Length: 78
Image (tube, rainbow, N blue to C red; front, side, top):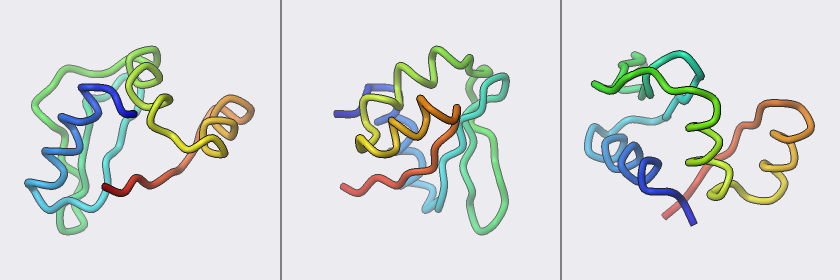
């Protein structure tokens, strides 16, 4: 189950018809709309905040990849 902030970010992504959500420590959450990356009107994220919101929503293989490699790429479907 995803966390509340992740749900908010995904709702914006859907509303803007964006294709990707980018969560990078030190930067605000960003989305890709029509090939252009646009930051959301939010403060920069830290690594702990990203982990707390995203790890619970990842499939097991993606969470394990993140824990062992420090990064992961996953998709979510509703």
